Amino acid sequence: MVEFEVELAPVPILDEIGKDITVNFKFFDSFDPNSTFFTDSNGLMMQQRNIKNVTLDNRLAENELGYNHATIAANYFPVDSAIAMRDHSGLSNLQVTVMNDRPQGGSADLSSKANIELMQHRRLLRDDDLGMNEALNETDSRNDGIRVTARYMVQIFDTNRGQSQQRNTQINNEQPLTYAFIFDFKKAAEKGKEVSQNSAEDIAIKNFVKEGSIRIYPMAKNQIILRMENMADTFDGWEARTHYINL
Image (cartoon, rainbow, N blue to C red; front, side, top):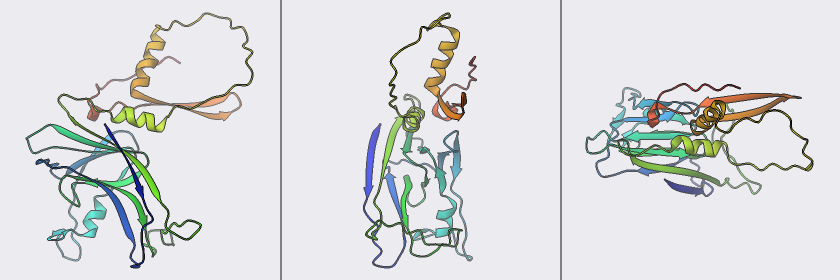
């Protein structure tokens, strides 16, 4: 697993042209995704995506300059936590997974062969007529373009030998360790039977924590919402199974 932290300086606009800035991960040694890649669906199951060609004004989707802008736009997908591609050249069983720290738009094998691209920033000078009714031009107090810093985790592994670290990384990003403070150190005497650490319920929860996500939201006084998500995905090589937990 390799971590990249990319700091993007303010996007220049002296030429009065808006720009989409992408972070690109290029792979060589005959790596061939065969116009296929995978993105997560709202942070959950990985969905297969296939490059779609879109003609524009009777022009071909691809020319000597690459894909036209309509084809590029049609093949960008939401990437909430990860984007991946696999080698279909027959020379290896490699999988490349790029995990981001925030939702972004992304694609693969599109702008260039065997390339994963994630859009880190956009700076436009005109409204794109897509609902905002204003140009997407974020600036700081000095009216300069904002800086954007993002982290990416990249894993390259053999699917027949290695294990995907995508879900573990995702859970650590979404549920980092937090600190809690207490100011009343008086502990009331507890009565009742203690639950064994090796009870069936305890083992079930421990197994779920390895593959799942647990979130607790306050609802009202003495009320909470408990949300449990099974993050194990057969795409990652996990065994398909259902968790049963007695609350």
